[in-house]
Image 1: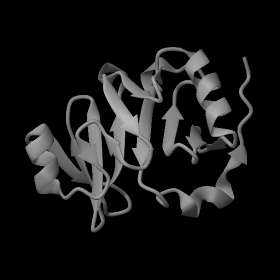
Image 2: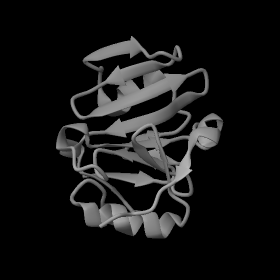
Image 3: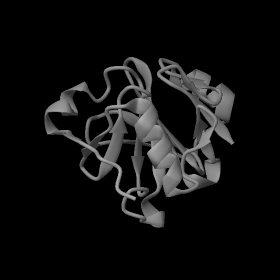
Length: 142
C-alpha cells in the first residue's frame, strides 16, 4: 500500500525531489523517458515518477501499488470514487480522467469500469492549472 498525502508526497517520494533522491528512495528505474512535454518519466514496476526542473511534479500509481488517500483504497471499487468526489466537493472530468484538484489527484479507469486503464496520479500544486479551461464538472453516476 502506498499512501498519498495531498500536494506533499506519495509514499517515500516528495514533490520537488530531484532524481538522485528518487533513486535513493526507489532504486534505479527500469526505464527513464521523455514525455510529450519534455518532462522525464522514471518508470518502475507499478509507479511512474515525472520530474522536470522543479523536481517531482507527478507520481502515477497502478493498481498493484494499492494507492490510498485519506484512508480510502482508491482503485478498489467505484464506491471509492464516490467517497473521493464527496470529499473534494468540486470534481472535474478532462480527457477521460476524473480530476480532484482539492486533494491533488486524478483517476482513470474507475468511472468507466475499464480495469486495464486504472491508475491514480498525484500531482504538484498548479500542475493541472492550464487544463482548467478544458475541465467540466464531474457528477458521480452510480
